[in-house]
Length: 209
Ligand SMILES: [Zn+2]
Image 1 (cartoon, rainbow, N blue to C red):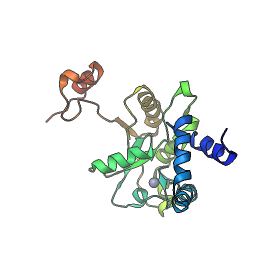
Image 2 (image 1 turned 180 degrees about the vertical axis):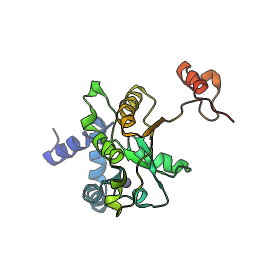
Image 3 (image 1 turned 60 degrees about the vertical axis):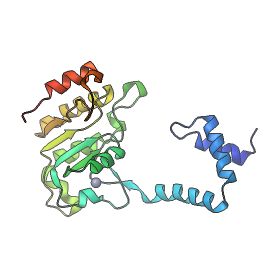
Image 4 (image 1 turned 90 degrees about the horizontal axis):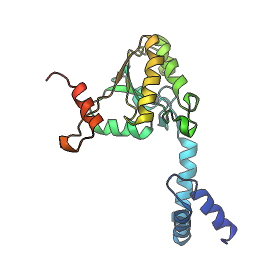
């Protein structure tokens, strides 16, 4: 049996995603061997991230300042909102460049098997944002354009697809155009390795060139 401070640390680390009991113990002993400064810096970073990072009141992304940088950026199209599952997806799209609209972060996808329903996601915030038109800018000092298009950019796996279908049904009556990200053959990918559904969608989703 571990001494109780170690056991507590192992227990806390074991709550992290992808960390089993053995890995948690390995990390705990690593922290024990680290310098007191490094261990304190890790503890401080954990405390700081919880204190300083909050949800953007407009797009629900994680941010230090509310509204977040993207929502405050007047050069970005407020009428175009890309709906994603996770904050990491915003980073990925920003890294790719070329997108000049705003975002909405759901913080998950619908997954009935895991007990995740609409109330567990930032769906109400999205509906409110899309439904309130000219009022949407109250947090940024007014003048915000109403949402005219929502790009549903949840994953193309089953849960992401079901989430997109669900959101499209809610958004359409609000007069918001709903679009789905295109799916297709990865750049540089060989057709023979693409699965049937991907290939079928790549053909269905073809566009003029
Ligand atoms: Zn924001």
